[in-house]
Image 1 (cartoon, one colour):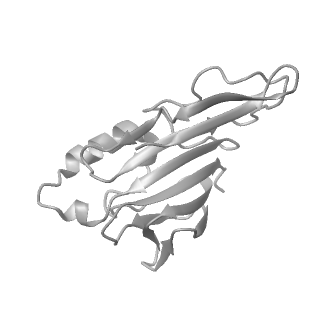
Image 2 (cartoon, helix red, strand yellow):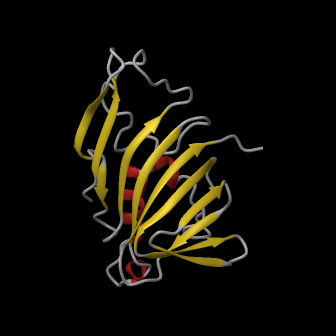
Length: 183
């Protein structure tokens, strides 16, 4: 999965500078789930500081196999590629291998998945999403679904949901997850 990431910040004189411009280093194409991908773009901690006195980033703010879901007050920016649902029904699909790989590259998200309701999950976050390419269906508790196409946006307020790609090609969605506290 190729995604370019450009990061700017302020130097000690308060001037904007390019910190980085290049391939997002934490992008993964899933071997056991053809068409599925995940690019971790950036993550902030609660109370993140910016500006000339904050200093420029020193290294990656996240790791390829560490937490992806932000703490309350933090954020996470990811781009996800969803394989068509038909991939899960293919005779050569290896569910345990795909699940194991998902647990390696998105352990905290994988832990939210419900074993008795494939794909259904709930996170302690407010998520903003935009469909970049393709189409995908968003399912909620009562089984209702809405079809989303390129350019459509999503605001997810911590509700239980699942993503279904009923099309015949990969769909790409960008998300900003904002960590929240559940009441």
